Image (cartoon, rainbow, N blue to C red; front, side):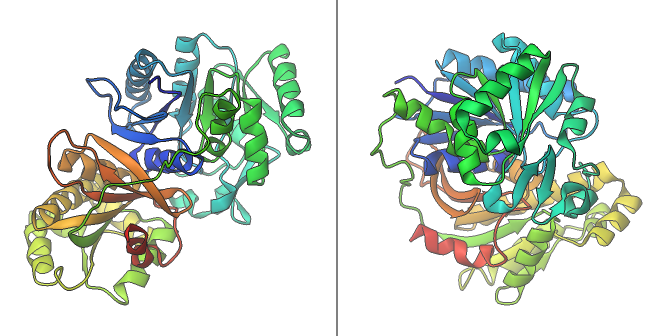
Length: 424
């Protein structure tokens, strides 16, 4: 069977977020970790290749994304999707713009859109400006992000700094008129020499209209929100069944654990909620830098507790604490120390019998799935908007591991406590 939609995500939690949206809209979806060697799994409608390209040098991000595109084209995909964070995580150098332009050139298309809107999680676009809840992006917690601080809410301006092509806007006055008006605006922007267009969206109905307007577009770029509208295009053409069960997962079991590296405000609240009712162990980057065996200490601590209830191992901290550690150790060194430690702890927990694990933070999730040797994930039921449960793909008889890879900004305050019920 030919894969209908081929997706490239710039981090692992973002890939899971997108895949979850596609499953929710009725597409059987798998997420592959990096560019695979073999063919796609059977009986899937969409494939998401998750890269770790959000914060690496722009040239490396472009190269990895083009390699993913080549594989997806060989798999016969009919349309392609470049997925990035709903808070447009990037720097003036990229990587969103450079990757989008490279994919456009490879596909021979002169126009695409940029729409990270995800209203269900409070990410909306109006007049080209991105809002997080009720405040502009530049006034949200993202202004303190340690790797991609977002200090400008105007995405037309942000994206224009990253690309050579001219960037235009499809504003809400047009979007509110539906897909025909959106397509007409696309045509007008192309005639005016624009290669990319930021598209406003305030609701899921807007995303549906934008998705319909993108039906014939070779490449779509955005957050996971627009993914809600794309499957309908394939269904209208008779390419996608309307009654397929897309979120079924194999039975999983085992002990339960949460590993959290994100320092976003949402994850800080989730950590505090879980600490109030479950055992928790804090990873101190300074102790790691001193050479103390924090990993062994965490695993010894967990061994005496995890059989009774879920445990939390976290490096989540407030912005001022993060800045203090970064000033002492350096941004990159501090991040690498924490990611490596959490990934090693996650591996130790799985070896100790953990079969159901939540991982919070894109960088942390990338490090964990690499340490676990995960090559692919089958996407299951949604826990909260943008975060589904998944199960690992295996070529042998190994029992699958249930994983929830949570973007730092996503999920309700009780996410770590309620997620397990979705696996029942």
